[in-house]
Image 1 (cartoon, rainbow, N blue to C red):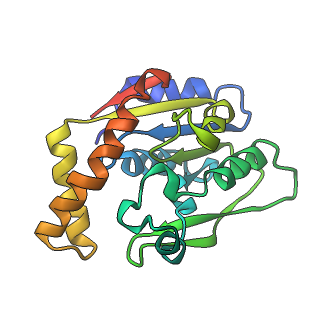
Image 2: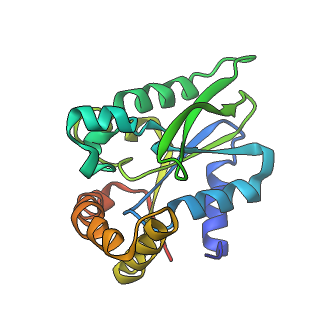
Length: 205
């Protein structure tokens, strides 16, 4: 996924005043959100840090207790209030304060607390995830805290293929991967696609 000049110009405009900015990268599962976010971080170096929304996945033990394990990735399988609270804290981060954020480890399918250190001098926080534009429940509090949100658009067939490959890479067999994409990822994708109009910019792959 190459970063065309038009995307770089938009990024530079966002950062022109030198103040901290929060940039959201959203889109359906498998669209390439984390790839784009990492490219931007690589481009900016120490000026930027990536903050995945997936760090606020509920732990598997909680999902099992709530009866939601077979829907992992749906909006109600995250601590959305905790995610909003973190974004608010990052908007108001004080000098000398390090904020520690969680990240999601796919190899164990669990969130890890305090894995990402964010310093007050970091100019750009790039947070990526599925539900940044959702206007339901606590998710509705996300959009007002972000300076811009980019929606990553990709061909649906390619996106689903990438999802199947990802699920296989992390332990599911072919049939399990196809079933998870059809019954879990795709209903979530339809919900996310309906939020596209609230984005500031559509990043086309």
